[in-house]
Length: 178
Image 1: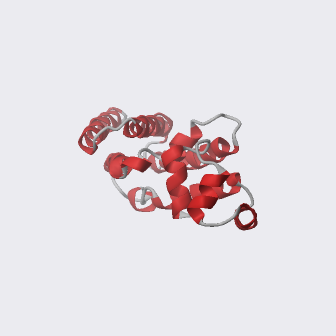
Image 2 (image 1 turned 45 degrees about the vertical axis):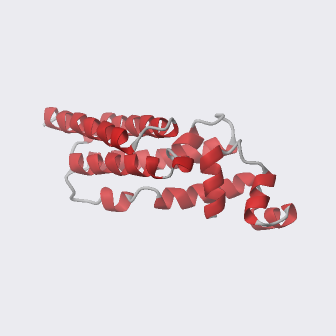
């Protein structure tokens, strides 16, 4: 799964062929289909693996935590993760969601992205329901831009600077909504 994840992250769903996968996994096509069903089913498993390990959402969005501080941690964590490995820059989920709207990979990725956005929105709504949609959308937009910038080769220092700037905007929006 780790090797398949690396390939999909490096090249995107459409950039990975069955031959790439079978060569990387050291299996033949019939074994691949027996093990994974299809490329789309393998990608779904990779997304599940990635979404469960990429960002420590349970820790960052834990109940009772200061919300602007937690959102700042989310953005700075994402900035570091998105640039940690140049071959796997950006967020696998966000980048796959940008694929062809009807593609299986895009549909699955958009579902994971929507689940994450809902978690962020619900976390904010614990204290500020009226601000939850706008602030969650801002975090999502920021993370999307950071993912694209990481794919373009931005440095970690530059990414962290953007995360800090976005965190300042979050804190200001939080104070204005009091």
